[in-house]
Length: 105
Length: 134
Image 1 (tube, rainbow over the protein chains, first blue to last red):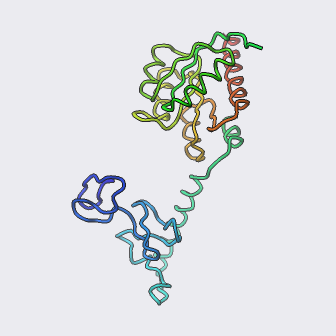
Image 2: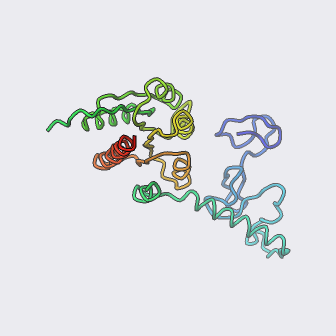
Image 3: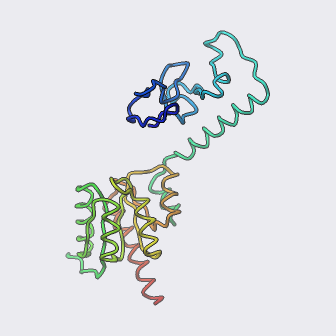
């Protein structure tokens, strides 16, 4: 996996860059599990994962103890990311041989 | 009852020895004895160029060159090539990619012998239709 910071090509199993120490995946602030860099939601608890540029959007309100007030554009961005995640989930939908036969008929 | 020998040639491309042997036996049992084997996509393309088989059974996940790349290459060589994908990949997105790349049929591993026979029959019908048109 290529480090987003220094571009070192790291082994796929590494969680941090062996050259500069940058995290090679998205860390879930709620449960601490690390997903892939391109993941938008945590595969274990469903919390939105943090991208460095929009990290402020996704701090988990329950943990912070306060309910964050979102601006309209922030909500729109969050909703659009959720939509993308749902579409990606739909794309990875598994099909049966019967479904495949229909696709190829 | 012994199946009559069918005058068709087949290329089986699969990195799994077990899958290659299984497909070879199923084909032989159906009367197809002209079977070439390849262990990855790159070798599959080479064998395809050499032997121009009537049909190809192509695995999806293989080292060196995967099935999707090999399918696209085979279709570049011969757009009319009949290719049956044999794989355990069941994600709809991936199935559609193979369909878009020109795969004719898609057999989900593990498959029953009966399903293999049905698919082979469809391929033979397709070949027969082409001969009729010619």
